[in-house]
Image (cartoon, rainbow, N blue to C red):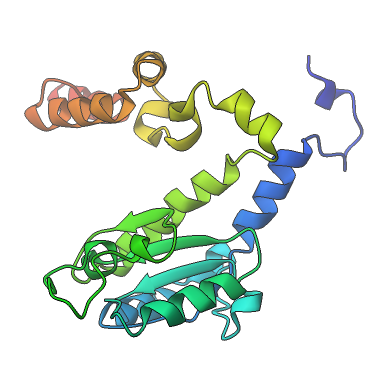
Length: 227
């Protein structure tokens, strides 16, 4: 019996690190920074069909001093690079950067003197999103992965040193199809300790596609259909 069962209703048990990171995740305000065609997809993500308001992100701020996340949506020219850096410097800490699309991530097809070959030459990037342009679903997936990173960020150098021994456990999110399967969860944890959780997830997906392995609920439904 846990301590929470002894407390009256209305009490919440947590620690400062989890609470602070949860509040940061639930109020991640992006800066208005669309540079090219990727910005159209970013606008669609904030509209009613996809509704970023579910994640507390509907407020795209015109002022960088009120923003936490810079979504670099589109190619960055050499003339725009110092402006981008200035806006980044004006954002308060903590702040994060998402490179949306192949042009922002690596320059894309614009391999010439006028375009910065990757926005990480100008600002530090926390999440790269491929695609030309990426769909709103892809942007939401990248945002959710960034949420997972923020939720597990350590507070202070001492906490960072404690968690540095196993970075795979911090940054990698366990897929839901594995989380609720006891055998698969055990295998995934062992793979994460060996720093190969991504490889394990890929091998498991390929096994499912070949028919060598079935997820629990799907396997039960197929067996019931055969009977």
